[in-house]
Amino acid sequence: MFGERIRSLRKERNMTLRDLADKLNIPFTTLGNYEREDREPNVSTFLALADFFGVSVDYLTGKKDKRTSDQYGFQRDFSLLEDLLDQTTPDIRKKAEDIINQMTIILGDELEVTDVRETAETLEHLFQVINFIFSMKMGFKYNYGQDPSTPYECIKLYLDHKPTLDTNLNALCEIYANKKND
Image (cartoon, rainbow, N blue to C red; front, side, top):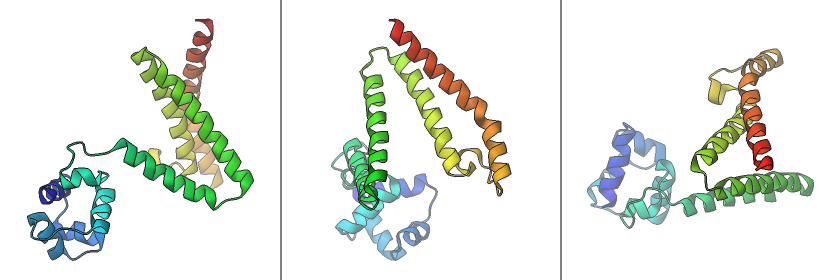
């Protein structure tokens, strides 16, 4: 089962055996043996494959048909975040925890709402606001495909895309103001 899954995931990405082997830093003949199930990957290789393809090890081994485990993904993400927070100063850690706590409250409140359409709309606006902030942090090259080389170009890109931010913030304000009147 694991060989079929590895082959299928590799082909979905239009990769050759050599491409995937190079990415994972393993011999392509070994990878071929895995796909034919002549050999079984060790635990660290299973983890590397699962991480590379964004699936759970249970999916790779055929124990589950669902590609990802939300619980696994959350645990991995929070573990990485916790490691980063452990390496910083207490005041920066406190600010980061405050942001995480506020996002948890916002998302938790939204997920408890019974109106699925309204929840989806609200979450989309929240995503667009967060995505805008992420894009700025990444220098606008992540979402907008532009790579400003000077502060002026960065500010210009910000101003060009600011109407999108304003539209989403205004929509959120309207949604939350209407909730207060309900």
